[in-house]
Length: 115
Length: 114
Image (cartoon, rainbow over all chains, first blue to last red; front, side, top):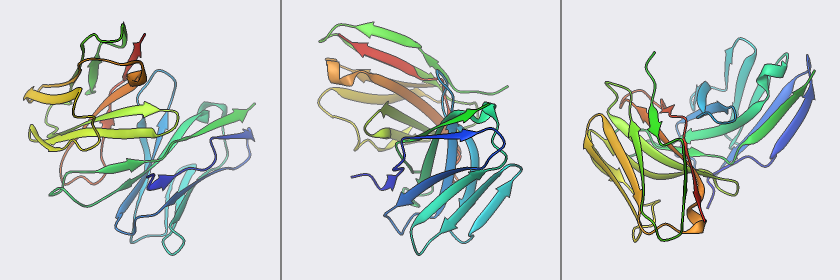
């Protein structure tokens, strides 16, 4: 059973516009949320994160919003650039295992930024 | 430039053969994770280790998969016997306890079982 869901498998956006990627989760025990970016033939790389005690975190063109009551988070990319074209994975951390990080990943959203 | 390395990058094998995938975590990292990427499940956790001890391998089919860390610089994932449904990309990641959510991924091993 998927505890982290990305319901949009793909998204296309014009260069310069905003990209909004969405993620929903079911487990209220998750304490940290992350976005990873993946290019073809490479492993995912960390992009941005947010603690469950916050509702927004911004890093340059990337902002993550968290709505705990709705169990929803989103990643905003403004302005979108062709180099942002990749698969984006949402992940949630469960605080178990004596401190070992235990991430649950969504199925990913493929973002295509059209020049 | 510290990074996680995985070998082989690509593996094609026939059903029933043994497959071994290797991972070298980043020096100083004490947690290692194995994931499988499929279209339907996304990144699926198979097993993870802390300080070389297995903490959770509940995501792994026990009858054919096994994961070990013979030493701090090597993690292995074995499939015996392999089946066509095992075809996927397998990622290894490493991190440090106490650094929430930090996982650095290797480039993956693309496995094709014919």
